[in-house]
Image (cartoon, rainbow, N blue to C red):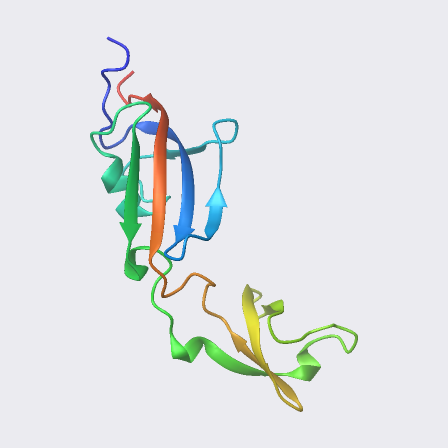
Length: 149
């Protein structure tokens, strides 16, 4: 019978998701027109959220609290660095709070937030903006596609 399906490992599911900070600010929200699709157990989403989807049914909603270690990791002091101002174009309008991207010697692009401005350098926090924060996921199951169908 339709509607009796429950999510198992390996099922492809479509979900809507609202991610909030503990102070209630919404960081991310989607709707049924733009669902997130994932295969439960593959770890492409947040593994701690994926494991909470097991045994949920279509239409069911669940609130899941993720600790920093299961979300974007802890804030790490070693990811706060001073970067010479001459790394950036002279006309770049960079000030405290600016989001910047920096090319590394290996060609990787990393993003950071300017948290301080000195005479010849910027202090940049390379932590993800949500690192060290507990997140509240409100997940609703839109559809379930059984892996053995």
